[in-house]
Amino acid sequence: MRENLKTFTALTAILLKKALSKVMETEVAPKAPKEIKEHTEDNLPPFNFGRPVEETPLLPIADSVPRRQKVKGGFERVPAQLNSRFLLAQNNLMASNKDIKLVSVDLDRIDKLSNAAFAYLALAFAFLAYLTFYNTGDYSLLWTGVSLCTFAAFVFCHVSYVARNSAEVLRVDFFRHSGLVTFPIGNNVSTFSLALEEVDLYIGKVSAGRGVQFNMAYLVPKRYPKRLRHQPMYPVDWEPRDLEDSMELWSEVHRFMDNTQPIPASFYKGWQEVIESSDFTEQDKIIILGEDLVKQAPFYDLENDRPLDKVIW
Image 1 (cartoon, rainbow, N blue to C red):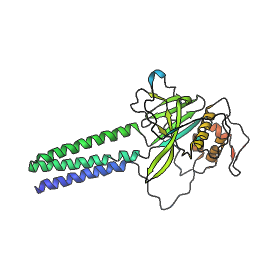
Image 2: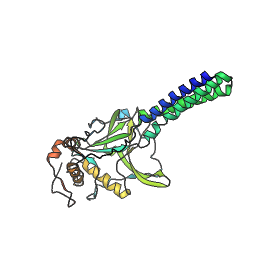
Image 3: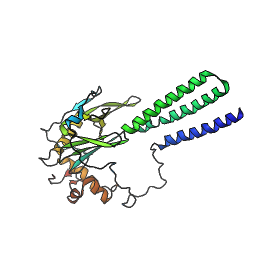
Image 4: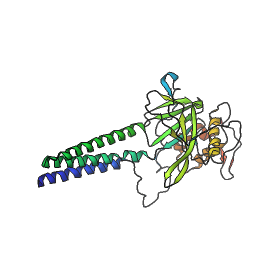
């Protein structure tokens, strides 16, 4: 009996070690260094968009299905008012003169993937139940082990589904030349593209817990590839104050995508902030803005907060 107990203790320790290692595989913020290094072009990591920035063909109607699921309650569609003219006070869109990149971050993905730890713990307790059943012959322990193994299987299946069909960081691209919007599929394994008219923007309040609510904006494709089993909504990287704030920014995105007119001057400020930022190397600035646009700088007088008298197409 003592030998069995020693064996069980050793195996349990191994299983717990594996469970902890799986949890630690999820990305955890590193500890702050004792000394903060000054940003220089030599020690900055290279800029990476996560997947190639490239246009893909328009998704054929025959290969797509219309959106089946309604946008959940409390969300409101944002119209684009192209007949109004305004200059945005703040334009934080990551854009060049060729495309706009909207990045979404799934903050819940790490928590969902870490649920694998519960599955490993369930297997450890199932092993304990089987070992005790072997020594006592109590069939209730046998069924307990079966239940725990079934629970672990369901958790592993769910974690696997989340890993395949979601990504911590996703990027939606708006291409000015073609007028297409490119959406990622799953964990950035592939993409599909739609015309701008086939994409809606919704805003609504979401809960952050403890009674705290904030606005979130989502891009919603009107149709999807047939092979997609679920139809996701894509959160965008600006937090709208209200419907009017989102309407202004969404209208500017539509103006940017209209290649029959110059790019709105509200984009100049974001370009100039990239040019003057010490957080990007010269190569990063070319990657973000493009070599042609970098050569046309400056675009904006940041000190006096006004666009320069330029026309960019």
